[in-house]
Amino acid sequence: MSVIYDEVYISTMREMNICKKAIKRLRQAIENMERKYNLNTAEFIEGFKNGGMRDKEDYLLWHTSYEELKNWEERLKGFSEILQIK
Image (cartoon, rainbow, N blue to C red; front, side, top):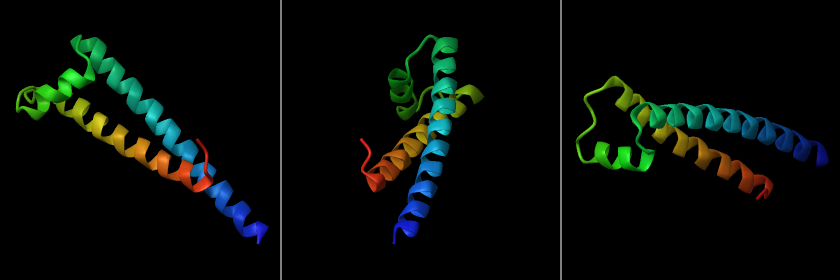
């Protein structure tokens, strides 16, 4: 039985590392956009949702990075719960 657990543990940890790398990459991309446009992401997202800030390719990339970040963070949370890691 412990062999199966070990396999699940190893695979889950591998997936968590992939998540952490993706999160780090996306956070860096978002931070770069914040510096470039001198605007924090919360303000940007609010403007984007209200229909503004859609005229630049960077804005679409910024929004996509933000949405991907949320998805990766949720995925990491799920894996952490599997292993009961806080």
